[in-house]
Image (tube, rainbow, N blue to C red):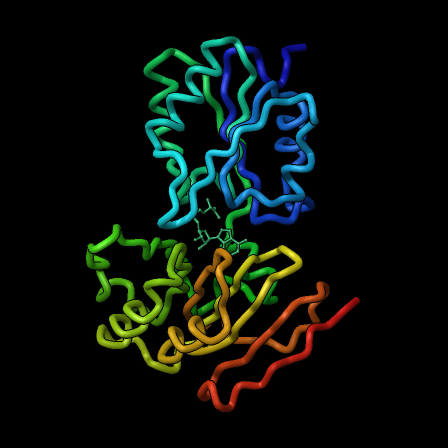
Amino acid sequence: MPELIEPRTVWLVGAGPGDPDLLTRKAEKLIGAADIVFYDALVGPGVLDMIAASVERISVGKRSGRHSKDQCTICDLIVRAALAGKRVVRLKGGDPAIFGRATEELNACARHGIPIKICPGITAASAAAASAGVSLTLRGEARKLTFITAHARAGERLELDWTHLADPEATLAIYMGKAAAHAVSNELVKAGLSPNTPALIVENASLPNERIVHTRLDLLSIAVGGKIRSGPALLLIGAAVASKPVRPTLPRTVFFAREAMVNERQVPAFTT
Ligand code: SAH
């Protein structure tokens, strides 16, 4: 039987949103078969704990504004490890093919004739919706799901097609959108989306320090400013994400910021 990872090959592996139980079985096997693991800052600590002590592990952590290694350096490190005959696992938060710079790494390996494969992971939008107990689509009302990144390079304006995005029949899943929350809500309302449109912010989805804020489009940036800390956060906007009275299964913090922040009702964290 062929080995799961041959020497001199690379796997781009989705590490999911953080909770190690949300890792695929294949990802777990690949982590167990690697000689070397390169990982991002968003890979959960519980996932990193699965890497055996004998395996080389290299942080190539990138968090917005604090890039510890640039993309070329990361590609170069991966290529060099594979050329040295190692079984390389490149762990990326969520799904490697969603805002994960996967193409750069696929191309770098291809240029050197290094076989590279992808193991998908649970993306932050799926994890955030699951944590909040909502669906990302809604029969008859939200027929479309749009994944966008609201990350603009330092000093650059956020250029998005707001007219197209302000679609009342779509759910918007906005990655890297915390800093742009004000622009996102302003531009969407200007483009015709109702200020009352339900919005949800989930920080650290699937992790013990998860925070969930139910709000609406016109209060998005107030809610981010008031309730969200320094963790990764996903913004969900659209009719489908209106809050439902669900009983959470994890201890966590849930806030409602629907009318105005002054009327905010904090729901005590539930424990199972
Ligand atoms: N490939 C990743 C996305 C990388 S972009 C995926 O598929 O999920 C990084 C952005 O993803 C963060 O800025 C944040 O918007 C979102 N994100 C990643 N992990 C998250 C988490 N646990 N909770 C909330 N948002 C998360």
